[in-house]
Image (cartoon, rainbow, N blue to C red; front, side):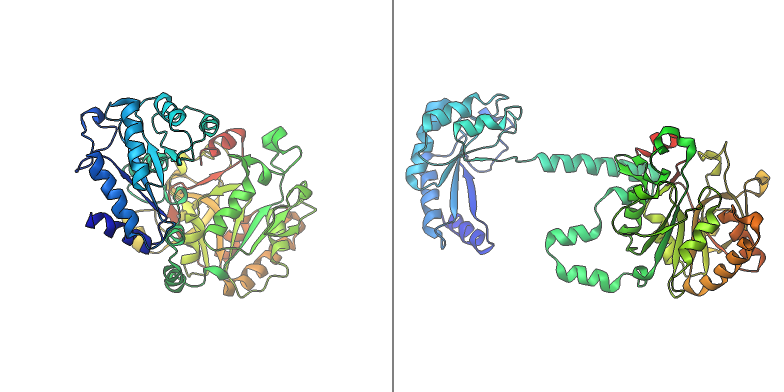
Length: 449
């Protein structure tokens, strides 16, 4: 009895509102494992535990729920009612009646016979198909969904474990799991969240993003008749929503979106919008020029496309690299969806390898046609520019666009001109974690991204 009283007091100290105790002998075994072979506790002794718990309370609102296992042990309704009445008279604030049947017959029969003597709780783990409304009609006070959240978590953990085993890294799972900050939030650990902000790498909040999203994407046909490609839904969300979400996930909130075709449909809250009304007669560099107008040149910026879906790993790794100009290159260019259509291939100072992880690799050129021996990967459409390099980039950009024949020029021309000027462009290799949306097949594939 002393243990029972100590338990009640400890629970009250922790702000817990109630405790449920069941009438089985020690050691307790789960009710679904050989229930009919499990002996029940002596009824009088169990009543003593209830009384001891009630006497130990400091707070009269602390409740003791008596769980009746008579149905589990196969003793039937009469014994269930006999025990419930004894526990109620001993001071139990509520009765939890349990059953292992796949139908609710036992608990309904109990409630009908029990009436309204005190609240009755149930745990419909086995008879889960029963409509909740039926339990309301019978007047049950509480339903406990006991393990469904735990079981769903087990399934998610097993999937993640399989993915980790197959891939041998975290890149494929990081975007599918809760961030560490969510764990801290659930714990109410404000001090830990403060520590996270204090000790994580600085400067992420100063990085901006420019998303070039002025084009229609006519290859998608009817999907882009009334909206640009950036607003085509992928897995129930517009592509641009996913892009903005990936940037937000790594702390980038200052996002400029260049819109053109059906610009009135590009109206997500959050980004700053710049219009390229000449989208039909101009290219990516004109859109970039419009985006750079009015920006201060003190903060880093990541330039990307409005039709490229990506995991947060991509902008995260770009932000962490301090060099003036940085691009990401996918080494698996042979398996790319762009393999049999126009792609931007990268020739670098070396291929991806174990040495490349510690050795700095730089870009030599980007082209849509290179000998296979010279291809080290596919440029993914990302360019990180540090604040101190923006003036140089703007100067080269203006020089390109000063010639009328370059008004439809694309990003690779700018990067190649920067290289020709003597600028170094750092290459960060990756494998996957992005998808270029250029066809209906891409839209279908992106649904599982």
